[in-house]
Image (cartoon, rainbow, N blue to C red):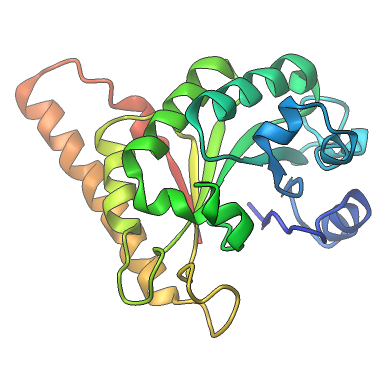
Length: 228
């Protein structure tokens, strides 16, 4: 599948539809702040808006999917926002994505975006809560390698997402640290290492389940997709 990453200030409906004409199948809204959406700010609610043809669940063509990306630093507001989007927009969206990679100071200092890469416990609580309230709408998340250069934490987080069976349908890894922002080339070798880790962890879990003959909730973890 060809995926268009969430792009703040750029990923608006005209740009997304242009990218779709070049083969993009899944596209995300610009990042919207969970608490600002809950506060009913009109300018923030403009970000999740999409053309009806963008969504598979609405009236879009085959292989046309649309997701809304949100960001927040507090578990209650993020989960409540995901529930609100499900109730208000559920017929027109195919996934809800949690941003765990935004490097902007304003977002980071609020404990959101890439700040969650140093708070795995809080991040997992957010994702579990989102999965519980979104029903059949898949929950995804976007992460970075880590906060600081040379201190990658993505592998540890990815392993927990699988072994603790959080229920996330897909994870996107931006191959840069928060400190890098958008400078220098992405580290595709690290992305490959993470992909290998995911495959290895899934295989180990499958073997463990077969050997013990236990009824582990492994199916959801097995289906978690990985995007670089």
